[in-house]
Length: 356
Image 1 (cartoon, helix red, strand yellow):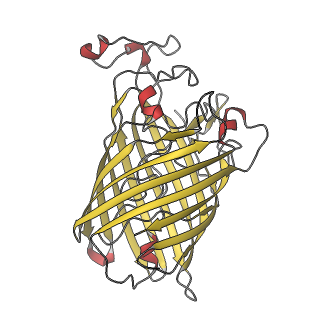
Image 2 (cartoon, rainbow, N blue to C red; image 1 turned 180 degrees about the vertical axis):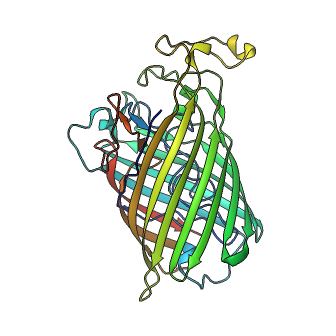
Image 3 (cartoon, rainbow, N blue to C red; image 1 turned 30 degrees about the horizontal axis):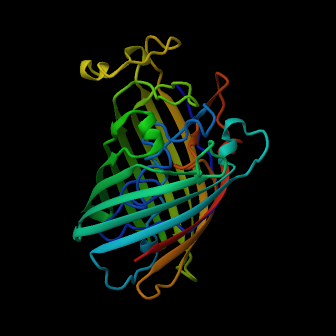
């Protein structure tokens, strides 16, 4: 079992905010906002690109609030919205980073759409591409993410609290989902929000169950590592809008997650699936221990004026891991060592978000 402590970070981001009054959950990599998983699958994002000590939270990002929350006057909201988001990531440490070399610099682009059935009910879908500048022979460096489909229900609570309930699932079209033999990854997130003047607070708890054909991933880079069975995580986010210019805000996010893994000794999940073949892992014949990962970031964001119906925003930050790169685990070389700026996940990143 891994014990973790939270690492804090900063970065450049034009964050993707598809959340509105109907309430997407907000946050990078979280269903209901920019959405979906990071550039791996729901089960093995980052494996082969990040060192084995790094656990990933593809659906458990620390969620920044929707940029639309920063201004009181958003104008008349239409029931649908389309979004596109571009990010460029760069590791802070460029030497001695082990298996994270392919992630020294990488790009990520996400596309999303949502429709508000009512002012409290929303459906959304998202998909993306990422580009690592070190790629296998014959590859362009571009790979797709899973498609994420989500439904969000907004529940107003007493004392101006707002609860957002978001069930979601994935269509496993990504490279890593194919390696992990993923069928789908249903999830549920609960986000409790409240504004205190210019300060917005979000607390989120989310869980995911990974449904796969086989207990291990068919990835030579990952060494046939066990597939994740389930994840339970949470995040805390605070964002403060500057009173002298409320389009400018600063904030911080803290993330923590637990993972449970399939037992590789079992090979496949059912008798029917066993007919397709089986895999085993002699190193872990009796089961897998629970693991824990951590991360976070601090950021500054600027909400641009609306132009011809297009909305955009800019954010600056430094991060210790993210859904695209993965998050560090506390267990290093068999010993619990949480790091504030772990060498394989400390990064700066910039992004551009457009919404119409």
